[in-house]
Amino acid sequence: MLLYNKQKKNQTAKGNRILISVTVLGSAGPIRILANEEDLVASVIDVALKNYAREGRLPILGSDFNDFLLYCPMVGPEALSSWSAIGLLGARNFTLCRKPEEKKVEEGNGRSNSNVNGGGGGRKGGSLKAWINKSFSLKVQSH
Image (cartoon, rainbow, N blue to C red; front, side):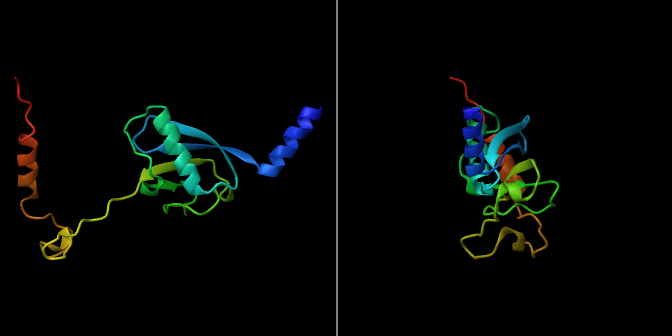
């Protein structure tokens, strides 16, 4: 009985612990994490990435939690703030996605790639040709 009381006191001092599932986009299944309700979303992303790497899952993601966003399907389509507590939502299932890459700015004229052909999000001229040349240049040479 004494052991039970100590465990109960320690649990209330730390806060309630919750079991959450984090599904990584493109991975086979969810990662289950035991976290405190007061833990920040950024720390949950960090723990999820470490567990993902420890389990040897594919695709390889990296370890920088700033490159990822955590979504909760029950809340809505926007990503969770990395400074909010994970337990405030009342949800237990989350999705981890890589942040969208920013469009690169050309060095010569300072315009983005989408503005090269007059805006509208069109492709830069010759990008298909460059892709084909690059893919054919990756030939495996025999000895």
